Amino acid sequence: MSRESELVNKLTKKQYMISTAESCTGGLLSAAIVDVSGASEVFGCGFVTYANEAKERLVGVDHATLERFGAVSPETAEEMALGCAKRAGADLGLSTTGIAGPDGGTDEKPVGLVYVGCAFHGKVVSERHVFTGDRQTVRSKAVNAAIDLAIYCLEH
Image 1 (cartoon, rainbow, N blue to C red):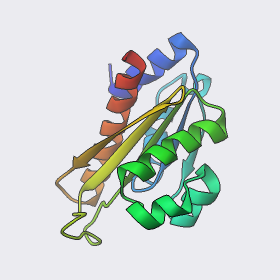
Image 2: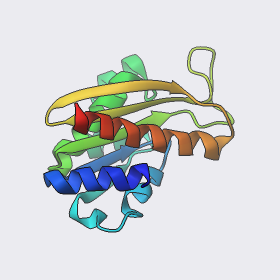
Image 3: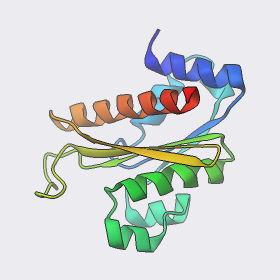
Image 4: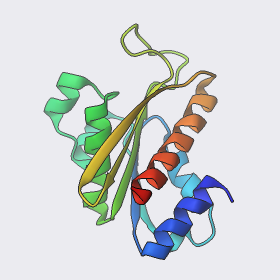
């Protein structure tokens, strides 16, 4: 069973709803979830918030958070996860924000840096990853990391 199927099954059994807020994955996370038959029972909506303005307007990321920590930060990932869950009325919010490359990296925030966030019933966690590979590989690895984090949050 794929990790996506495992996630949808766990959500279905508990009758939980999930929402996503994506930056660097640009809809791939939502697509991975809805690729699973039966996902319509647990997935109401997702937000692609590539621009900072969209992060603020659509999922409620605080402007001060973006100014102080940047879009690619654990703080932003956590606010994205909390915000998408709240805006969608979901039990679980899942977020991705990062630098997929090949450009845009710095010494402090290199290409491949991704933060994934998960908010579950008001509790929020984030993880930092630095993935290698081309743009598509980084985005794909970010999707997998987010799904793994969601499963972890549901189990703990």
